[in-house]
Image (cartoon, rainbow, N blue to C red; front, side, top):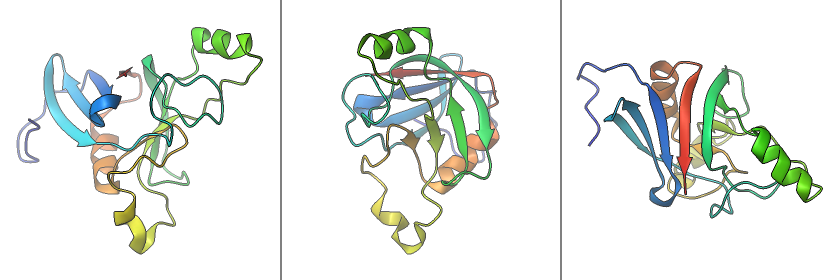
Length: 150
């Protein structure tokens, strides 16, 4: 349903992640302008509860800053944890964590890049191919809302 690279794009107003579909959508209003296959954490079912649970959070957040020099091919930070996430983790006496990103493949992947695609391998982040990360990097502005559904 995504448009081709030659089509003019509407500005991205929201990022939608559907964990069960393993898809990330760039939306302009209700219209899907891009769609990507994603990899999630090693333990993808359920909301992130604490640092190290290898889950990807669920809920509404903001893409609030980016790192062009991360350990992965570029990364955009998701504003996890919010106040509710902190409360849930504290109720269990745990640290909610906080370095949840959309990113490309590990910088050292090299010739093994193909082995990551289609698998859940992150520690709770949302991963795409490097080419897709480059496109997301160009199309999504800091401050864009992101909604992550189960």
